[in-house]
Amino acid sequence: MSGHSKFANIKHKKEKNDAAKGKIFTRIGREIAVAVKEGGADPNNNSKLKDIIAKAKSNNMPNDTIERSIKKASGEGANVNYEFVTYEGYGPSGTAIIVEALTDNKNRTAANVRNAFTKGGGSVGTQGCVSYMFDERGQIIIDKEECDMDADDLMMMALDAGAEDFNEEEDSFEILTAPDAFSAVREALEKEGIKMVEADVTMIPQTYVDLTDETDIKNINRTFDLLDEDDDVQEVYTNWSDYEG
Image (cartoon, rainbow, N blue to C red; front, top):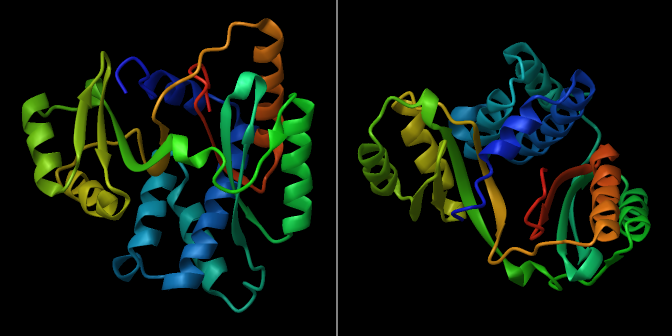
């Protein structure tokens, strides 16, 4: 991952306008709804919900908004059923793109995702067509300026908690875990008061692709802009090296 630190992109993402923050809160609210439905409203007995609450806080989602989302999801009026769906496909010059969505209407979401790929000169493929190029990992990003712990001590604590890898970038630390070890590592850091810029289970490309053609760059950004506008879309992963998602 060296040379592909997500930290600069995360800082860029945090500075997005209020409308974009609203979209992020909507998406996290859907994740909360699914987690509550699957495992109950008590985060102490629902590790998935606990992880999503931590994600919400790292995105500056207010506590009362988080609590309201949990109450809404556990109330009798919570009759909207969201399903996880994943799409895989290709952008310009064979770039790989994975789209994860939470939807109450799979036909609508599929049409919107296909449209985003098509308008960017790409195409939706079959399940598994590009996911083999990515590794599913828990990823935790820590801002060096907000971390008082020595790098070696932080690394040893993360590894002792079950992390697989620790990378030091110019302005951040990156901790990688197996997906099933992510919660334990995140909670160990939380107990030590370590502030996390981002903590999530994600898809990390095994190799990155550079785009040099201006048309290709314009087209792939068109795809990402359309996907970003779609409230059903939760996450977008790609092996394009300059992606700022």
